[in-house]
Image 1 (tube, protein in one colour):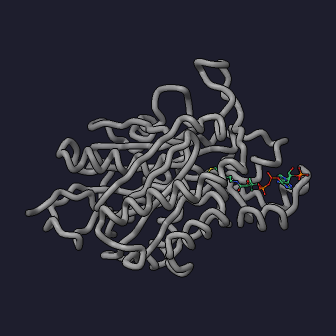
Image 2: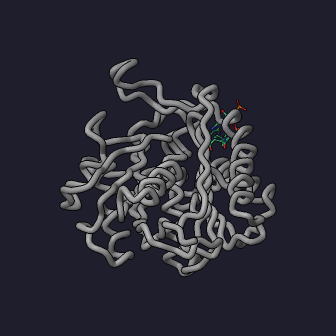
Length: 325
Ligand code: ACO
């Protein structure tokens, strides 16, 4: 029996021009390249220029994804944009992106699941495409975390950066087999009992300020590997495969130690793990599509490859997507 699948037509990414290295940070606060690299694997991050907003980053990534897919912006009828750093409290940054791309039909909305945002957005778009409600979607993760960091807090400001990544998804009829192209299974989880372990201490309803990111790093680390491996194992089981069958593991790029520990626990060899965290730090919802974009651009991920995406972040939220490129 045939099945409608959300097939990836193309992907693209964008990083702001300004690079902030660990050495740059060490000149401003009490930290060192050695400490940051050893604990996180991060070497540099990109910072949006004054007047450069999340929507601008998202539009650049979306244009790159459309070009890679070889389709016109006008063919897009759904935009789901994952961000925790919107241009404004409202309207959704997705409508600024829609307008910037010259699209005036279909639907565009934001989705907020912090670092898991892209996984949640991809699962959401997949459901809309498979239901027949929309035909072709842009799924975007875009962030300007530099705007919500407390630059005097060395425990957090060294970890994050700005960036955006996007994919174009299209509803296509496939044979209905495990060899189908497209999204094969999605798994989303949340547990708000952890909501004070990684949060922003402001907001329109509470303080009427934007606020700054606060994190209990050790607590996040403690839960991350277990939650990630748990949801990935669910995805593998639902897909009827084992970790050995995967061609590529594209994890959330938060911290090299979390990536390594998760891959080790899952039995995924290092050469199948896509790592870009050293180049852009933790870009929250943008991190998975940035890593995807890098591995597609350099020819590692090819059509037909079995790819596992995962992320975990504030909330806590976490999730995994199994797809065939
Ligand atoms: N440079 C130098 N020293 C630092 C820095 C820094 N940037 N930050 C903290 N320290 C110091 C602390 O003050 C502390 O000093 P003390 O022993 O004199 O008190 C010491 O380093 C150890 O601090 P810890 O916070 O215990 O350091 P830890 O080894 O846990 O590493 C880190 C901190 C890297 C944040 C780690 O906890 C971590 O990776 N957590 C996961 C957080 C994460 O990745 N969050 C991203 C969002 S969630 C997600 O996306 C999965």
